[in-house]
Length: 285
Image 1: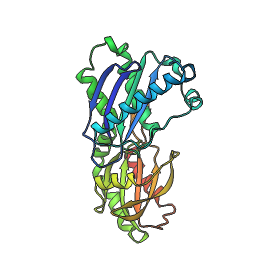
Image 2: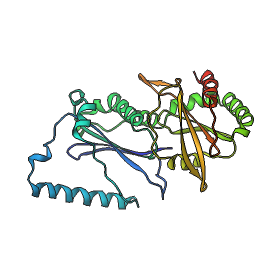
Image 3: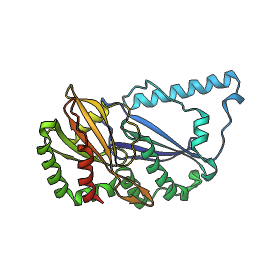
Image 4: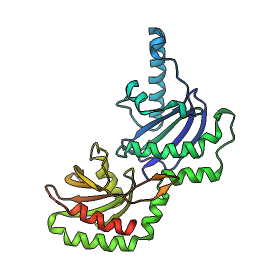
């Protein structure tokens, strides 16, 4: 599980819906991601005087630290994107209400993929509830759909259906490539949430540790791969990351699988990630 909490509020602060998918792990850095689906243009900061700005700053900092302490967490950095970037990448006119959505997640997940999941929830469920402050509650059937989207239920079911074949091919591949330093394989969803591990060296929890230590991972084009360095059990490892062109579609949202190959340092695999990707793609298509 990589997305732990999901909340829907209004830009005015009305707390409409809060979902705890799983209690977040302790002693682990997490992200609280923000998704703005509001149509209103809030008063720009340059229209406030210095006293107003300081009051907003004080209230924000105080609330954030109280919130963090309630979770036994600390806030080190609060990052603000430029308004130019926001205006360039968004079209506020298509949103019907003043909806803000947050998700507490693992830091290594692809933000764009999480945004696509949240947007799917907004379009299929939340828009029907606007205005939120006078709306009916989320129905059990709707909550089930929210959980399925956030936890990659369809992607997991498809992998589970072909688990025997995947495990057979992956295990043979690990044996063949052992001398090249290959120690483990993992299939993830399109946001990098681990689904299935192949090999005995790493557990799912171990994969989380590796991904938490990997640093920033850029977006990858389909049928391409990159490699990154990470740490596991205080030892350096290399991770090859291959993005497939197969995966489930949910209401028009295509979610391609990603394959991770865990290797000894300085293991140059060449065309090996692509070879394995093609084999898995034949099964998961």
